[in-house]
Image (tube, helix red, strand yellow):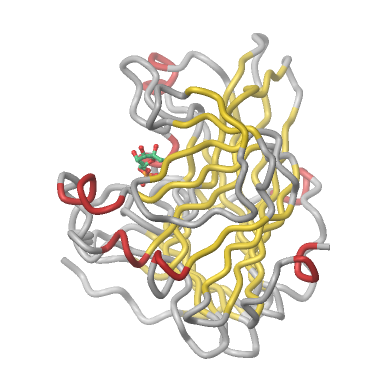
Length: 313
Ligand code: TA6
């Protein structure tokens, strides 16, 4: 296996193209203050996001086999065109298991101005093989942006390129790195309805004043506010997640028992992660021919672990 080549930086958008040990392209982003991010063309998956001090902010399983080219357990996997299991389709959709391309013509798709940031535009289109499994013409675009303040923004856009309407679900399945799951509190989902995937997707209403974790936890919060705070007391920091076009929020921690039966998860990795991702699950998006959808997720890191009130509003 080749060693990843030294990065050759494009100063215009502060990106560099490197290859992983399987020869798959990765794009490195950096800002002038030391923050960085890395996106793999395998699945369009963000696999690293570091703050100005070079500290990794996304979780990656301790049992990831980098020589096994598949969506790694961690980072920000993309779920498209479905979330969850759907018949014979791959869990969370096929987009994460395809090789994406760098989008040579993103501006024709009027992404929000990314001036003075480091960003990359990726594109996934169906192959003839893909069309046999999911017979819909689409273009799935992803812009990954690293801001001057180190925040990470992902903007996804789906276009229906054929003559038939289709529907899809979508999620940014974000694995956040935390000091310990017992130190984590999530605010912004109070009084929101959710499907509990541990109770056959039965529907409940969140009662607590904040979400904390004492056992396996797998819920999809429905039509939630567009700002959620993930507070890590031990690290005295808060991930402030802002979203647009992504009405639902996935919250997941496998806890000990489930982690032990996951081949690509260390037995106590669950203590170091929490999945909190913007999604469209309850009401899939339907696109007529030529129609587009866009979803935007921005994660800011606030060095504070007090109440989220001032952070979200
Ligand atoms: O969102 C929770 C979940 O559906 C879990 O059941 C588990 O299968 C997890 O997603 C896997 O997510 P990943 O994106 O890592 O494949």
